[in-house]
Image (tube, rainbow, N blue to C red; front, side, top):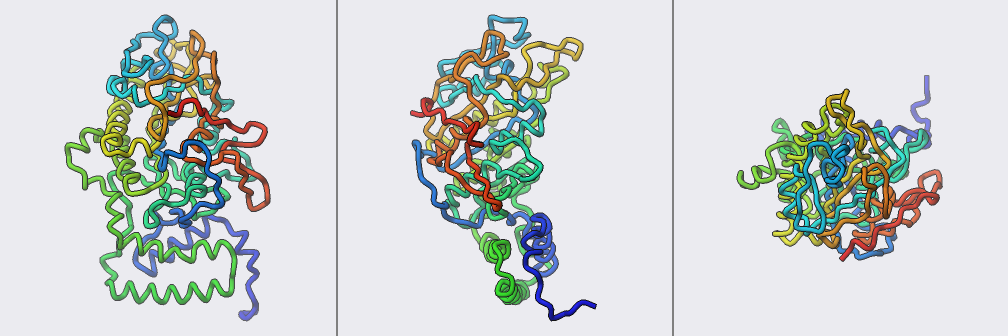
Length: 445
């Protein structure tokens, strides 16, 4: 029989699996306090930047990251080839209010071209979806020995939380992996929302628990927490020590309404689009308006190996309505200059149209497109060029690391600043030293 008085080896707690610790806290809160704290775990408890040296224009305070998961076809959206019908197929090009053309599938986006910078020289070395998405979000290729922080976690760690009540990093319509803080720890992780129209679920006191009982349980939990922390003084324990306080503060705050898009008039909801992506963009606007640093909204389904033109038209219709409304809405509210809005994808699609796949296009990481608007970006311009067939970068290549470094530059974050992992290995927002990105400074006004 083990000795009940034997002191616990704290190293075992230090080495415990992060998800295991998180789940323990969730279960304890649900059963003991009568409320699920799952949405608050990893909500970015730190409220100030960690020794951050500000660089760049630093006009942006927030980022809305629109992720086109699946590999958006650049040739059928932002990099059309009107003189090469063999590559272009049936898609026509239309003029914009900027100095470039885009696809006929994006008529509303064409109207806000003067507020956008289209990057047509993106390039990546990752041609598989999971690896490409990992690189897009983290500036590093996946490794079996470490999980790198997502870019939203970098932003919260380096910039701090602007609204100390709300999470600093929120994702919608995405895999929870996208909100992972990696080795930064749970306090910098994102809050993953399943559906943007459901708000922040499980963030209110259970009806079966009275306010008096709730406060009593909190007092007992606080006493237990203090005793536990005195015995096990580890970074993990300290990180979770303020969990209950943060959760209760959010539960009782009027700021929680930022997650409720039903507070918006029906006309506004309809303008964004009643689909999950449109409602996610509306939620993103509400969150940055309330001080959330980084919001990601995913719009998947771009893996068009088969029937590319029908599928891209359908995907683009949703993107067109939501993106154009988001940029216009931010601009009207005076938020566009302080909010960087990006459209990103893991790779493009092949110039070759695969007729045996009902006019499909395959994966193509060598050249593709991205978009930036707001956050100090000079609108109406195109950066970089692909060759006449859209197969290779012809001018001004932009790597994934360059793209993420540019996001950092807009926020005033030094993309080359080293942050060490627990094992002492150096990491940077702009990627590894050998392939460190460089921000595209010329696209800023």
